Image (cartoon, rainbow, N blue to C red):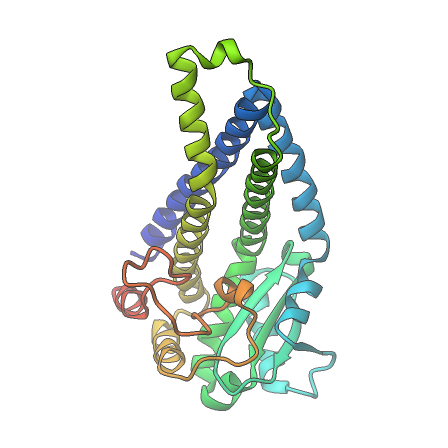
Length: 296
């Protein structure tokens, strides 16, 4: 059951990422077709922007995210020995280098992992997590975060953020062209019914692109949480520890120091807000996560 869930979640992630990349290419093609009469030019622009944003975010993702969430790095195990040893143990079991350790001074229990790869990763936990969880529960949470590192979710989330930024930049560029009356579509082409239809569909894609990107990013985040839950249990062989931790975290107060753009990184939504359709939720419902863990 455990390995079936892991395999299923990996397949779903592939489908979501494929759709995400297709959306970026489609928006680029739409921009190029509307303003330069060349879908290829738009796709090339999207690729160049994507590479730029990817390199920029991956090179300094840890420092940026930790600063935004007011996290302070722990340099030595003597400061928080139990936390340090649990992270050390789970890293050893997960066969990844030990990540840097950070503390967030917030009474609400939560945690997240970030970085560009296992060799340049970091784990942050709140003061509330250390105060409210026992060792078994803390091991469940840390195993979950180590699984994000082990499964390269940290790089995947950074990639998703870069793709969202690319889509935003492309749509903003299109908006500026519209505002200033830009574009080089030929008047005689616009009289052709088929060209008019493609033009309308391209504009439609540019308008709805950011919404579709947000949905794809949230779907990716929810799926990777399921995968990290299952992979975490693979490390601890104890689903009850994570179940109990999720119950305590979900019943706690919202965080005060969390950055909204980082909310999808946390093990549970730090702001406790939910959409009635769940389409815009950064995390799957806690009840569903617990139900899956109980079946392992």
